[in-house]
Length: 94
Image (cartoon, rainbow, N blue to C red):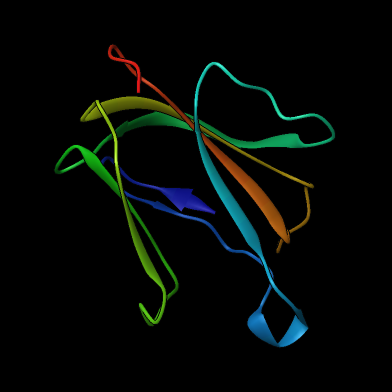
């Protein structure tokens, strides 16, 4: 997993191994049974979050109220988690 000023790349379980679940929620939020895998500030190019696979076969655009966000990513702690929660928190709420 690595993040830049305006992007975040999260590795999840490969499709050949089964489905992966990605949730995006408004913070503050701490999912039970998950560990914090990443935490930083994220400045989006627009007030929307794009979640996509590497080939953009699946591409979801989620409108969010803030361009500038604190972001936390929670998972099971493995290199390729099958369940990830992305928590965004900014000045405005959803």
